Structures are given as C-alpha cells and as structure tokens.
Amino acid sequence: MAIYDHSKYVSLTMEFRCNLKCVHCMIEGTMDRLVPESDESFHELLAHNSRTRQWTGLILTGSEITLRRDLPDLARQARAAGFNHVRIQTHGMHLGRRAYSESLVEAGVDEFFVSVAGSDALSHDKITTVKGSFDKTLRGLEILDEYPDVATITNTVVTEASYRLLPAVVERLAHLKRLTQMEFWLYWPMTETDEKRLAANHLDVLPYLKEAAAMARSLGRSVEIKNFPECLLGDDSSLLVNDQPQLFIDPAFWDEFARNGFYQCPYKDECKSTQCLGLNTAYIKRHGDHSDHLVPMNKSLTKDIALRETMV
Ligand code: SF4
Image (cartoon, rainbow, N blue to C red):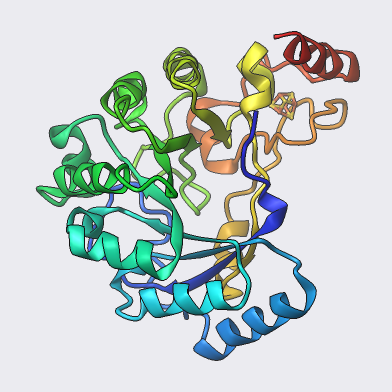
C-alpha cells in the first residue's frame, strides 16, 4: 500500500547540473538547455502554499539538487512557509559526508529520495560511470539512518543493465531502518528509438521485478513500480503507481517527453486500467506489442484484487 500521497506533494526543478553520467539518464540531451525554476518562482510557490495549504510536502529536484550551495536555505525557507515535509531527489553521493547530511537534516529536509543504480560498487559505478559513487551513496543512506525523524526512499531505474540485480539491490539495503519505500522505474529513452538498447523486455524483467517487490515488502517497505504494463504484474498490479506530484519544470521538457509516445497498447480501448501507461514507441520497436501476453484489465479483476488486499 502506498504511504506517500502524491497529490499532497509538489516538485520544483531547481538545478540542472549533475556530476554523474548515468548511462540511463533520461535528460542527458536536454540538461544543458533546460532552465531551472527561478528563485522568484520558488518564493511565489511558498507564498501560494502559505495561503492555500494546497500541499504538505515540497520536493526539490532537478538533475542533482545537492549541487546548489543554498539547498539548506531553500529547505529552511520551505519549512518556515509551512511545508510539513521537504524532500530532495538526489544521487546521494554528497550525503556520504556526515556534516553535509547533518546540515540538510537540521535545515528541515526530512525525506531523501535516493537513486540506487546497482546492487554493489561494481554494478552501480558501471551504470553511474563514476568510480566510488556506490560507496558514497550507501554511506549517505547509512548516515541518514541514524536520524529518527528522517525517511528515505530509493529509486532504481530498471534497464538491460540493472534488471537482473533488482533482488540483490533490495538485499543490499535490507539493513536500513529508515528506508520506507523502494521504487522501480522502467526506463524510457525520451525519443522514438532505444538507441542505447537499454529498454529491457518486460517479460524478462517480470520475475526479477516481482521477486524484488516481494522481498522489499517482506522487509516492511512500501513498493512503487512505474511504467510497466499493469496486467503483466498479476497479483502485484496494485504496486503500479504512475501518479506523480505536480511538477514545475521548464516547458521545453514536455516537448521531449511527448516523443516517448506512451499509452500504446493493442487493448487500449477495452482496458479499464486507470494507472497503466501501456507501451511506448521505442519499446514496441524493439520488443513488439506483446499482444499475446497483455490482458485488458476489467472492473471485476480490479475489484477482485482490491478485495484480496483487504483480506490480508
Ligand atoms: S492491457 Fe494494455 S493498457 Fe491494459 S494493463 Fe495491459 S498493457 Fe496496460
């Protein structure tokens, strides 16, 4: 069951530099052109939320938000303006410095959404292309684990390079007490073709994804899966959560995003899923439309699953 209500959070992209070069980066071609939200927009959003209390949580994001030196100040201002939660989305490397993590927690950052690309230094660093990045990120998660009022969330992008590692990722992070939610985002390339051949076949991914989800849940974590056909997940279909907080980002981002061509599915017209994004153009070009494996969701199936969940 989801523990974070995305409708209560708002995301602001405040930084478009990054000091990793992940092979799966979805904005690598646009990072240089995208413009971060201005300080003026930030203050306007704080003032708006002070008046309306529309959101309870603010997410500070971008390519790598910890590259902003004034990040603690931003968090402090957001808390002073009434946000109950301030979350940062980060590759987590800088959190490995205790003094830095401490400065963020003291400033009011209480939720850390951290990217974990692989299950160990070898696999993670190969994906981020920066040696030593796994050790720093894990160290950061372990430091944050010492703060009782902090929650961490991890995200692992699922690609050809990572899908077999998913259960091992869960296992490697099993010792973390404050890890509340693990997310698994299936890669999409932001273009019409999968030039890097990173989009793994959903049918190959499925057993690893289900095993990782089951392991994470047995550790008491909430799990969210993004961009995977809901019908393929079977009794894990409730883990598909494609909802996202309202996002403030340079409008140019959406031009690139539209190139993905989501919502393609041979059963689109009959399927009753309200979460599924179907397949995208690049995926279908590589792996086909899976018309022999996809099964349109119907109301009674959705109801059956909801009923089963209330019984456990
Ligand atoms: S039939 Fe298509 S739209 Fe429906 S859940 Fe499956 S992939 Fe998604």
